[in-house]
Length: 418
Image (cartoon, rainbow, N blue to C red; front, side, top):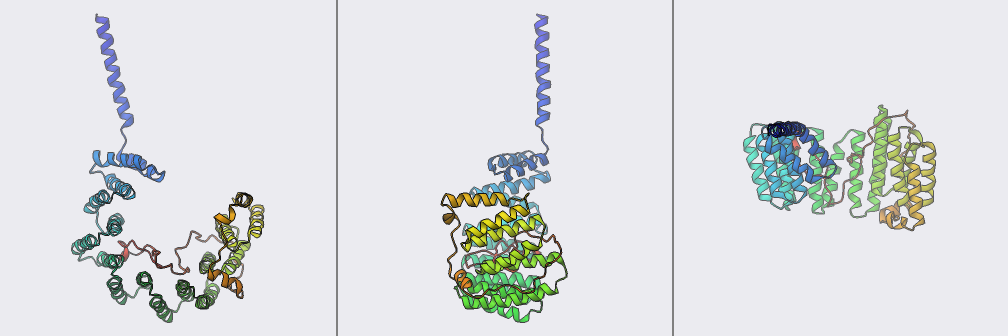
């Protein structure tokens, strides 16, 4: 009997020890759970992310990781079209974090975005009122909230009221970057009303005051882009010519090699967006011929491929990809050529990449070639070649959004019009 009692005691002791060891192995820190939740979000595992985030906020509500966990839960709920639950999570963050911090600004920005997308404009305005009272002595936060208020009015359909607010703010600033942002927001309100004439005049007035060739180029190309909304080829071409003139001046004056290449890439993208595919291709070909940076060349080849296929130049595109594969054997260009050949042999190419027969593309193709002059091969460069936000690109159509604001003055803004 004693033997069996001893065995039972030993077994119980072993079970307790094992449970303790297993418990220790499963005892993750709040930060470890948060990192796992973030990783699961990136992998598209929303359920897993939600469960991990809930563990953090339930077991460690006072830990700093809990704030980020609430943000993860809000994102999951918003993506799952559960706005009330998402708003509740954002509110928990807003209650604990100052609007003077990036996290606090983001939580409020997302709150306003959710309210607007749910057509709860009155709630959005009341939320802004609350925070303007709370931060009445903070000029930066107050200004940011006033911009957000104008966007609520604009998104609710009261574009005149939204535009008047921004115009008042614009008149009070002397900062060029803030002027540019306000011009984007005012343009967006005009575009929503399809009032292209007023948007064009706004940019023409700004161009008349501008001294920098680079900024003049930006404005001229934006005016050209505004004319594309009515397929006005004559004025689109006229302002593209103006923009090209300013680009040539800016390119000549620029001493920084990386900036020079970046400007050239942006000019190519602007021509492509306006429908001048031949001009875009010539600029891209210049970059392809003069640069060795694999990342830059990859972006150039991809753009050239898209542009040539829009022109219906399938054979030339294949030859170009094959030459790129020979020049950069480590790149993806051989695979791109094979994929293109496969689509062509299967008859899928025309369906997936049809020739662009839009009015402006056809008219640019029929007209005299238009591309910058005086491009000189710069030394090898390492420019920032991520997709530009549109510094030289034309404004979008009326139903498109504007770039996210970068200044504190617009931190709560979530709209995006160029």
